[in-house]
Length: 551
Image (cartoon, rainbow, N blue to C red; front, side, top):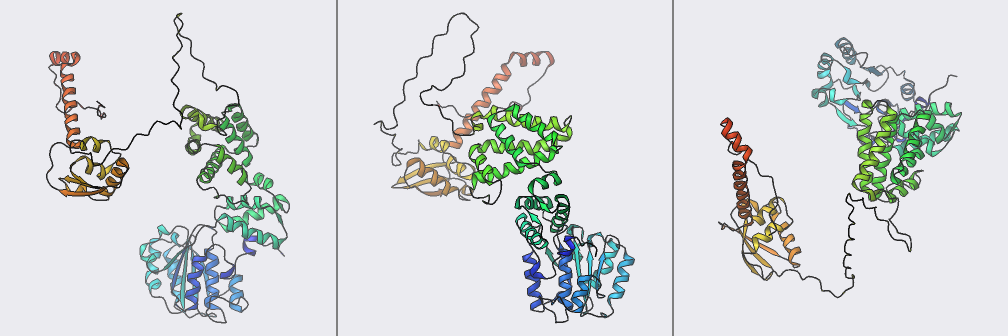
């Protein structure tokens, strides 16, 4: 007997055996159980997620000799012939090679005849998006009102290319990509039945390489069995798939954390020796950094059975979160820049050195693999002072006065008094409050009216400023400033010219006037005006947005 590949041998033959598509199975099961059978279904999803498998199971459910149900017997003539691909009333059409209007017209002419053997004549059109526009137009009427004995099952990997007139005539189900955990569990079950030894770490590499496709995972498993002689290990899978050993990435991150450029070069040479693609190394590094960042926020995000859990947890504790984010950004962007590098080896080294240089330039302490500690009895090292160009010795700086201990009896500064606030004090306070958006404008364009207990009255001329939660945010800011709950009562009326907003406008106008006067009196500008009869255009002098003076 000829060998049957795993993807065909272990193709699910019932809804219960289907993996990872529970949402579609549930809908189809309920429809079959209640006999609410649509005449056209559309299955969408990437390759190898079960579109054709679902079509065959659905065809068996419709034509099983035991009756229409969600549990076809799998033993009658219709079920066995559909599984074998020779049932006369189940027609699979490849739209990639039969995309013309002539093929579609021929199919529709045959659809009017009653089924020869089964209960329904089921047409499964795979890659339906490949049909021509005329072929779609030819099937529209039949697809909307087919004969009662005809069912259409359409499958595609690119539903965006299907006309909306076809989509509206079908029940559409989007098949999801398989999760790596689901693929690993399914492969373990299959390999146990096949009597093949496999390490969970090796199966996880296969699942990651399959990228959500169960068929790809089974095809890779066939290749893995042949490559490893029936013993699927993580080391063998790394060699077969050409993936990078995670220990190399961990070593690289430790080198970056310690600022060890020599060790970084050693890692790059290791990749060259193993003929590993540098683009894949940067991609794997970005994935590892993302997992580290997640663990820094959610400690139990990585399951304990993950072989990399301990190393990821260690790096999550050691690396500063800002350094992780910076490393990730450089890894992602450097991967796209490899094509511009003289060679990939140089591009990879420069990406790693860029991570090192940027972190050291911005926050050197973020590279520490642990909390910065000073050995007992040792003075912390200070950077050596640069020599001065003069021969006169520089007197030592005066010693700073010792700070008072934390438990000293110096009383803490009391919070400002709400009852002592006046209308004259309000513009300065409104300008200092840490607010933005409508809340800031409500504070700065209002005037102080009154204060009674914790109720503060404000007056504003524009009612639209008191919207979108602006009042609540201003109340929270005032409550924090005065260390007491504050309730605002806002009235709408004309306000005086003494508000934080008008003061800021006056300050800007004064700055603008001074700037224009300085330009007009500038000697170079005067020379240009006198020599070339030039003029300063009105509005061309702009004052940078400078904060108000503290005095």
